[in-house]
Length: 530
Image (cartoon, rainbow, N blue to C red):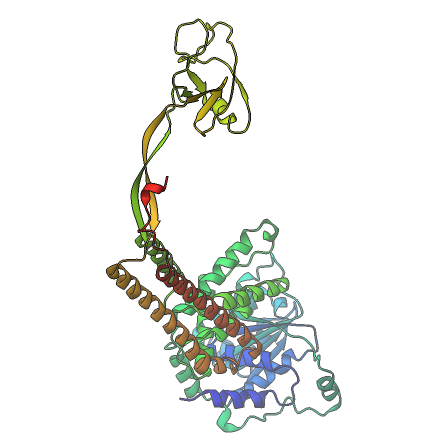
């Protein structure tokens, strides 16, 4: 069934003669079809009751019940008076529910938080199960929507938490802002309470039940689950901050289940078989508890969809990891290792070099030709006065040493003392030198195969993005229940995702350029490299 044209026409007719209430009207109808309830927060005189009164015209044979609560309201005024004849003749406590809440299609309760406990308890059962117990009879109420309103939120500690939680959608209603609309609103005769809905646009009970059954078949993709999980995580982060200890955002599992049904309802009424990112913006209206939280949750939802609203079948991090591993393998595959022999000064006792054919002129037991490594290094730039050293680190028994003046010799490894050159003792060593070379043919073929897999994957992802842009992006801007401006955030996410994919392709091409243009060092004379 193509339901969207019917709903679109229905919304257009519901909004005739009403100014700047398109979104709240759409949300109210959506909530009603989803089988949920909505709370409208706003000052008096901003058309909260008007929205509710007009909604009844959306349902064929629809009736409405409207009541302004006060702290003295009784259940009789809401659910109907007790039948005196039933009580007298049959000894039954039963209400006359005709023209009261249990018989209405659309219910509007203004100043809802002023309801007493007995009314609240009865409302909870009606909201939860669509059942009203009238005496010993359970009535399945025909109510499609319960719309509550107030100019304030429920007071904490008044026992209103359970009732507040039953309103899945919360919406802040404002006055008319556009000057032209305002002028028309205050000057024209409005037929706001007249039934102007054409019969073919009205929803009958059979259609309503059919839609309800089809809603359950709407698919929820991994993208949607991912967005929900990220929103939950960000709310947990918000709640963990010390400054928010008095501003906790709590969403129960039951509420998340109802939110998902609302998203499915939006998808179905937009003629889709699966929930999309635009539907997810509806979450904003379902997760705030205090008016000041609205901006916070809006930013959480917007930012989540902007950054994570288009997750491809292949995670880009998987490709990044594959490229990193590929890069390491290419670098390793273009290396050539060779053992190179060399000589270095031999170190004695971890800090001395030995001067060949020289001994210090002192009288004590030990070796007289060791020079500290630190003093030897000084000779690279300056003369040094060298004291006597021996083969023991304990020099306490040494006689007062005679100092000798050494300077840098003609060669790096020689010392000059009184015009005589002395060499330092060296030892043969070996080290592994790394050289570069183009990859051998078989290895190069493997590199090309791996590169081809990566580039085919990125090309497929870009095609997926373009398909989404071509086939779905335009539809996002035509969602019946969400402001089309939010589609720009999804388009931004698409563009950013494509940029990230192209960066991966640039990196892949860089790796290929590396192995194809690497310097061949295998023909060098390794003996000259020391």
